[in-house]
Image (tube, rainbow, N blue to C red; front, side, top):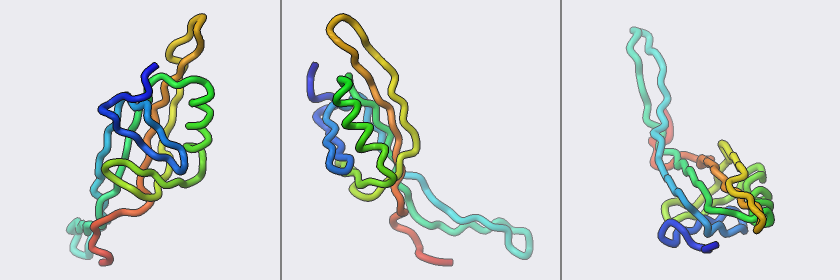
Amino acid sequence: MSDRYNGGISVKIGSYQLKKIAAYVPSWEIVKDTFTAYDYRTVSVYRGRRFKLSVTTGYLTPEELSDLQTALFAHSFTVTTPDFTGAVLLDSCSQPLEHANIYGKYYTVSFAVSAVAVTGGSGSL
């Protein structure tokens, strides 16, 4: 199986380097504080942007799956991508058995992470 997918993009999760990437979807979520003022107007205060990343791996062997699980299931970890570097938390993870035959078992993992901190915000009310 090839070690590189998706144009050679790699994601570093803690000290683990993930190179088998089939889908890589970065996004930025706008974070606002919203409340109702004394005159019943809705007031929104821009807080910043939160980085989110969704990744689907290529076929992983059971050993590669175990290494990735160890990296992902840490409480909080640093992720390094072409778009973002910083502390993140794991939002979701699924790891179905994708392909099994006499030559072995191969898994794909889909996971999503979110940055711990927002960037580019106004600071305070």
